[in-house]
Amino acid sequence: MPRSSKIWNYFTVSDSVQSKAKCQICFASISRGGTSVKNYTTSNLMSHLRSNHGIEFAEFLAAQKEVETSKRKAIEEDNISSTSNSKQAKKPHQIRISEMVDGKVTPWSKADARTQRANSKLLEMIAIDLQPLSVVEDVGFRRYSATLEPRYKIPSKQEISRQMIPALYDKLKSQIKDELVDVTFIGVTTDIWSTRAGPNSLMSITAHWVDKDFSRKHATLNATSVEGINTEEAISEHISRMLNIWSITMDQVVTIIRGNVGHTVTGHDLTGINHQDCFIHTLQSVINDGILFQRTILDTLAIFRNVAGHFKHSTLACYRLRELQVKHGLPDQIIIQDAQARWNSSFYMVKRMLEQKAAIVDYANIGGIPQVTENHWNIADTLITTLQKFEELTRHASEEGSSTSMVIPSVYMLQRSLAKHADDRYIHDLAGGLLKSLNNRYEDVEKNKLLVISTYLDPRYKALFFKAGDTEKTAVQWLMEEGDVEKTDLSRGLQESPITSTPTKSAIDDEFDQFVKEQGAPQISHTGININNELTLYSTEPILGRSEEPLAFWKINRHRYPILAKLAAKYLCVPPSSVPSERLFSEAGDLYDEKRNRLDPNMAEMLLTIRGNYERLNF
Image: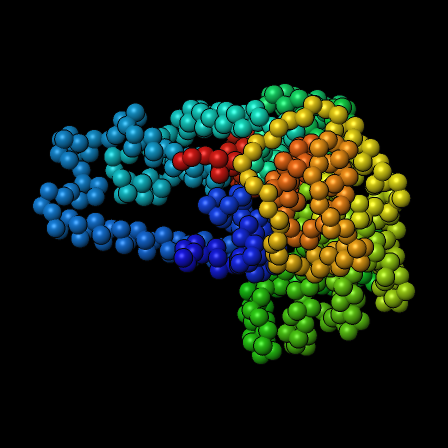
């Protein structure tokens, strides 16, 4: 059956692996959610498109709107046809005489089910689109609403802010609390964002867990104002208070993943909860260290930035560039302007300009932008080659299905890759600087209990990427200690079956799998009885391909490994980065625009929390 959503113009699904879709723009593998065909959704696909491909997302929205409009017209035509065949049929939205007083329409009452339904949709629009509450006072919006349904009385701004949004927020909190009742272990991501409108900052907390069906779940718990909170003690106290509000105990929290920004770096120590640095932020620091003293690279980036800025601020320049793209048979693409705080945006800027080199060189000959020398182009090419794996790993770490289990293998593969370039005269200095910083920042990575256990319990990695000879023994010892806790029977239902899927793989996936092949993983299988037997048996299981879903393995084999499966749910629930919390704050900037710069902090928290969990709302 053909798929009706236009989202499939940007994604494909492998016949062998229905659980993931491949982005046709950046080739990322995105989970479709759920565990079976009937449970798959397109929510993750739309989130990926919205977060990473803004232009294509806008195209998708426009195309999807056309589809929905066509469907609506077809339904209306059917209604008209049916009406003409029945004298007793009434026209849609026909207003009865009883609903009119002195020739005027009588509005629906507040208790009317139709009013309640319309109010729900209004709240949905405000929360999802982050519309200002004053939208209900706009003349154009009121006329539009009156045209669609004159009997619907739009609630006032005060009614929305004082009654309706708080009620929806409380309903959502209650729903999330119900979900958390049966959750044993939770991973937490957090970040702090400063508003442009005043001294307020917002701190977000997002909870991540694996449910009884071995599906990943997450919920935005808070986006709270933290005005005046700028000390380690205050931040720790605030985090503890927010967790208490949700009845989340310290024993439940596996770890807190925080952005490596200023005072948040050590703030979580004082909560008594294990904490980890954001993997993506750490990679950012490694790259900054690697290029900070590379004058030739900094100069090249400055020139490319100048060129990108020229096209960003000139419509005429973009028009001329388009003509040159046609001349050289190049795709019609805009030149990306980077944000210096994010290295991957600089990566995409340089990569795009390399792809458009012929058109840019031609344009420079006409004048208007600085000449980019061949030496600069060579340096740019070297930069992309060296940072390609960093970029791929950053994308993987940003995906919703990623886990901290990827950190140790990723560090290992980066070290291996950079070491290969040690003798390359073109990138020796850059590769050497990156390798030195990476080694320094992850010097004790195999002493980190969370990272070691999560890696070992990921059937794609296990002990293959441990460099120290005793790390596997340490992992086993830690697991034996945790395995002494009372066994918990996980939900039953699925029969065991081998994992034979072969999803679409990226270049970094191929490199990982080649490394696994070189190690010669065992291929034996038995049945486990206790923690010792489970660990012995698990060590003989074949290594999965990197693009496989580790939780699928534990779901299928949970009856063979009842203890390890429970521990896998604990340690694989934690994402490697604070991206889930940061993603919320990328939308917070829209909330505090010129129309809403005096927005009450409590209202901002409610709107952002609703926005972060809108898929839970059964409108």
